[in-house]
Length: 273
Ligand SMILES: Cc1cc2nc3c(=O)[nH]c(=O)nc-3n(C[C@H](O)[C@H](O)[C@H](O)COP(=O)(O)O)c2cc1C
Image (cartoon, rainbow, N blue to C red; front, side):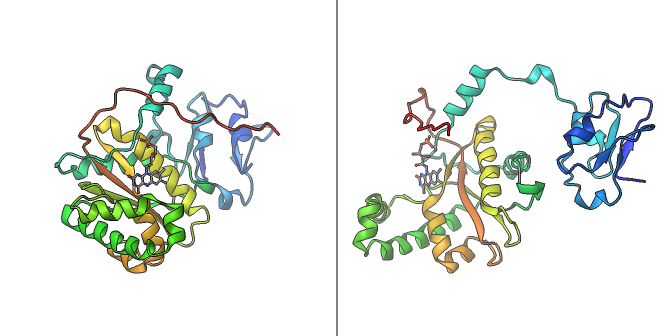
């Protein structure tokens, strides 16, 4: 069996699959149905465009079967106003309820994040999940230790005046680093991942946006990220293997507050060059 499985009765020979294949490995012979060009299998990205673009349900793919590719439900499409409000409503959550996040919900978040695009459809993003509050607090403490060293340098303080404030707040008993989050989700990618940091950032953005649908809130954990980049010990403590240079942590939990308005941002600087 080849890579493509064509239902010859359904195929209209419109060539959409041929034209939309990103690596141009599908051809339409003068007679018959679409087929993979000789040697083409090796460059197939497994992106499923050929399956998705066929309006006749005529094409399946050995690794992206049509049965596992549900049809787009037109009735679920959302309006521009809905999309705009949805995107503008996403906010960083820094106050979490003292409530554990069900692992099933964490799995759901990660499940949707895998539909984010990845360079070459490489899909090499992996996940570490910490959901023990004591352990998360410990990692926040290790981050503060690193910040204490950092703020000895006046240039650092001049560039990031909030860092001494973060340390002082920690010393006053607040988790100013990981906000007492009940869960920490770390997206990571191994050294071989060519677009590792971009891919995992996109995946985390999907997770971030999806969280509200599960009544969850998130916050990008930039202070921990900076510390993990500079301290192999903290990176190891967070559970990220040494061979994974690309990573980013995100706090996850049930938000204490709701947001009722959509504040303005800076005007974009745009240059049509
Ligand atoms: C890459 C990145 C790192 C961030 N790191 C932190 C952080 O360590 N602590 C924190 O409280 N907020 C952090 N934030 C949240 C930003 O401060 C926040 O996104 C920004 O103020 C805009 O607010 P909003 O996310 O509610 O729209 C981070 C955001 C991003 C995108």
